[in-house]
Image (cartoon, rainbow, N blue to C red; front, side, top):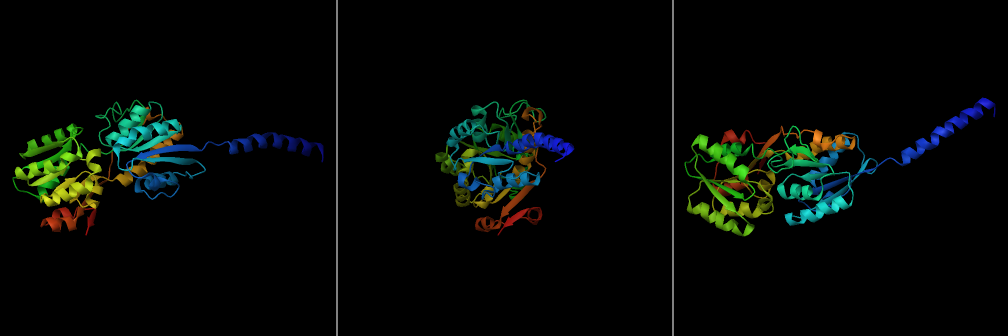
Length: 330
């Protein structure tokens, strides 16, 4: 080997070894996931759960490869909100790089209590400012960012749909829990400007559900607005059954109520929200701070109608509503 070739090989070798070491040492990010479902449905690169699946699809679209760039640490509450504090604490102990979570109150409050340093991406927070998760939508200011569900802001729209469905002058019952004051205030504002009468059905636990429906029947309520929340999310099928028994047309703030037998829902598209959460994950993994990432509001809303439930209630859905539906369940 001549002198120039020898020098060239030595120079190449000096750079090649550190480069190879850097490649081997590339960080694989650990993404914690916290939502109400089962952990088994969220595991691996092809999860069965629709929300985790949407998140990973969003990451793939951004060029991330499972196992090469990131892995997930999923934790599901299995339909029991009281499990969130322990699950959030476990993710913190696992030293995940960030946490993506369902935006309802028990999950967000558990994560808030568990850490003030690990970045949190909300996938559809009910009321991020009102819940004390961020200082404002434009300037979160802490370790939370992500997407809002705009559930409070669309309460009036749900009431309008309910009145279009059942135009009679009878009271509109509102099923809510103690955490739902902003929703109730939004409903009151919408009803006041239109001259509609509301009946508040506030309950503290699931054991009071049947009594609430009896109150609605006694007051001759003509329809029902169910305000979404952890207490009701775990009772979706039972609420739909009680509404059917009471012959009360009901509108909900999330589509899975309709999939469980409810009549109609109007809400932001949660699948799209979880897919969009990947954009926040990408920015944070590249060095952005949650405090500086404005909370995004949804631009896509969906109207879902269960015609089987309408038929059981003896209710004809107006053509004006059917034509606007994103999905009709036969």
